[in-house]
Image (tube, rainbow, N blue to C red; front, top):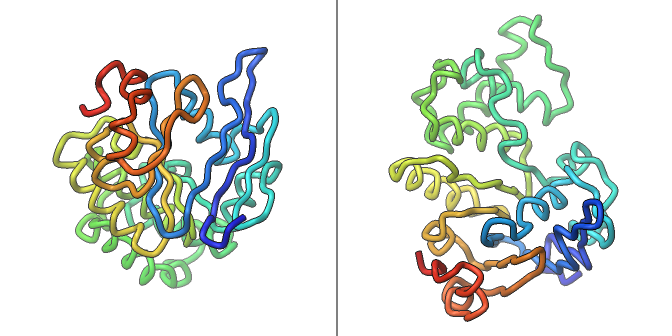
Length: 251
């Protein structure tokens, strides 16, 4: 693995009862970049993402993180290595406050149990860092709000904050713009750009304008295989990509 590559796959393949969902995918994500995984419906990107985040075990192939083979490593152990999936942890406790949700994520990152019975004085040791994380994602004014009351886009920001509490070196985002209006898309796009300033981001995303704006590298999947790779200008002009998207590659 080259020094500038943080995540790499070799011959990554996943079959379901004879159906090949991901076929011999070779993916290389460079450190400090935003790398997007895109493709038309049924392209295999969700399966590929679930392989990378250890929710599925490949039929064949390897996944390397920082040069270490993590193909058989459990998701929780991979998270402790610095590879975290956002929206995996999410606002698990919808009836706790925004601050309490981030505080719980910090407890997890530091190996503490979820000691709800402890005094506020004991748990308060996490507040300073929790408030820093809320400010980083633009939720400082929502610290005392109950998580379930947050607007949809703000909930996504909270989910990113709880993931950042794990202090990941690499962040994997599963369709971060799904279901959002234009204002929320702009807000979360700006947040991802800030988050990526000192870490690597790999994301699956359908919003191609977001992909064009944020991504350094784009990998296009079709029928489970890598169809094209490069920056947005390169892949959007590739005839194979245009055909795969049925003419919507520039949408």
